[in-house]
Image (tube, rainbow, N blue to C red):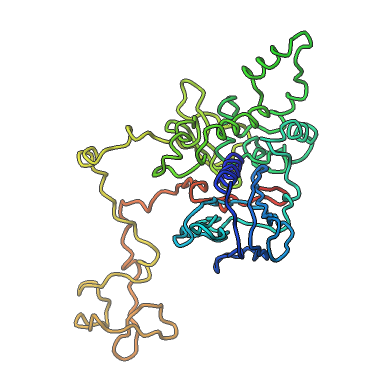
Amino acid sequence: MPEGPELHLASHFVNEACRGLVFGGCVEKSSVSRNPEVPFESSAYCIAASARGKELRLTLSPLPGAQPPQEPLALVFRFGMSGSFQLAPGDALPPHAHLRFYTAPPGPRLALCFVDIRRFGRWDLGGKWQPGRGPCVLLEYELFRENVLRNLADKAFDRPICEALLDQRFFNGIGNYLRAEILFRLRIPPFEKARTVLEALQQRRPSPELTLSQKIRAKLQNPDLLELCHSVPKEVVQLGGKGYGPESGEEDFAAFRAWLRCYGVPGMSSLQDRQGRTIWFQVWAPLLTQGDPGPLAPKGRKSRQKKSKATRPSPEDRAENPPPPIKAPSRTRRAWRDPPEKTATQQPEGTSPQQDPEAPTVPEKGRRKGQRATPGGLSSAPASGEGRGTTDTGSSGEDGMAVQDPMDKGGGEAVGAARPGSLR
C-alpha cells in the first residue's frame, strides 16, 4: 500500500502536473464511491498539493474574478491500498477514477483523477489532518523523535517493534515495506519488544568534544532506528518515480525494486504479525536456515523464506521428478452410515438377494437414515460388525498453516485491521 514516500511523491506529481493549468466547473464523483460529494464549483481555479505522513491535502483556490464567488476548499486524502493521482484526457478517463477535476477551456480538456482500484481510499472535506496522527517522519523529524521518546511508557511500546512501527500516532508515514527495510539495516529482530529497542536511544548523547561535522558524520555512519525512520523514506522520495508499486509492468517502479534490500527479496524470511501483516526479515545466524524473529513472535507460526526464480523447479524438473501419487482417503464417518451393497453371502436371513438395488430409501421411524425398506415394511439391518471393514492405509491429510500475505492481497490495509486506538 502507499506509504509516506508515495504520498509525498504524489503531492510532487500533482504540483508539477497542475502547474499552469486552470480548472473549472464542478468536481465530479463516481457513482460507486462511498466518499462524500465535493460541493465546489468555480469558473476558474487552481490546484495545489501537500503531504504529511500518510495523508495528502489538495487545495482548490478560485482565481480572481472567478464565478460564482467561492472560498478555497481543501480536501485530505488517505490512499488506502491503491490510491493515486493521474492526469488524463477528459474523454479518456482511467478506470476507477472516483474523483475528477476538469480543466477549463480553451485548450484540450484534461482531468486530474483520484484513481483507486480497490476503493479503500478516503477523502474528507475541510483540509484538517486526521486527529491523533503524530508528526511526519519526513518533514517533522525533530518533533517525531521527541514524540516517540517522550511516550515510551505508552502500552503501544509493549508490542513487538515491527507492530509498533505501524502505529501512526508515533510513526506517521511508516508502513509495511519501510519497517522491514529499517529493521533489516539495524539487524533488529522484528519481534523484539519495542520499548527495549527504543529505551537505549534516550541515553544516547553525542560527545561534547566532537565538532559539528564529526557529529553529522557519526550520525550518517551509525544511524539509530529513529534516524532511519527519517532517512530511509527520504531515500525513496529521492528515487523519484512513484515509489512502491506492482511487481512488474511499469518502468517507474524499476528503481524502487532495485533499491529494496529486504522486503519481498529472495532469500529473506517472512512471518505474520498479530495484525495479519507480513513482516520480512533477514536470517542473520550464519549456520541457521531459519532465523530467530524475536521473543514476542506469535507462537505456532513458522517463518518462510522467499526462493529466487533460479531455485524454483523448471517444468523439465517437474516432469523428471513427478510428485508422489495421492493416497486414497480413509473411510469417513459417512461410510459407516452408508455401508456398501451386500452380496448374496452377506445378506442376513429374511432378505432376498434379488432385492431391487435401486429401491429408494424410506425414512421411517426407528430406521437409521439411508437404510433400505424391505418387503412387508421391515427394515434390514446389517449383522453385528458387517459393513464396517477396516480402514485403509491412506492418511486423511495433515494439518498445516498457510501463511497469508495481506500486503499483497491488498491488503490490506484491508489486510491487517488496526487495533482500537491505533491508526494505520
